[in-house]
Length: 94
Image (cartoon, rainbow, N blue to C red; front, side, top):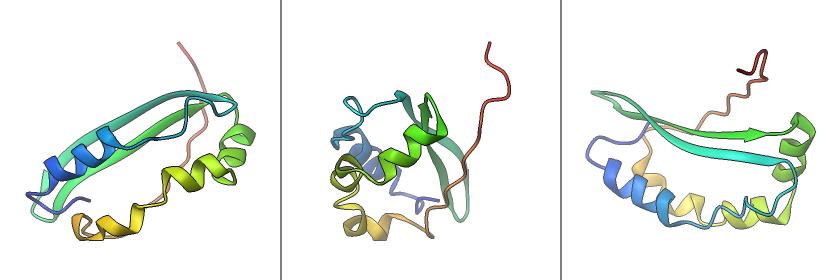
């Protein structure tokens, strides 16, 4: 969740940052999704699509991952809690 009133600042950071994804093996697509707003804040999801789970796991151990997340701690005041990872595998593609 992002603290109410900080949504524009959060989105600006994500839109302007260098994700270091385009040259990573197995990367397919990225979306920043805005969800519902509550009294506690606004829910966002960072959604990436990978060719395989192995490609995703390799990225999390890569220099590109470290570069993409190098400044993550400097924006803690925007978050109303800790980010939570939720991973999914495709059951069907259409």
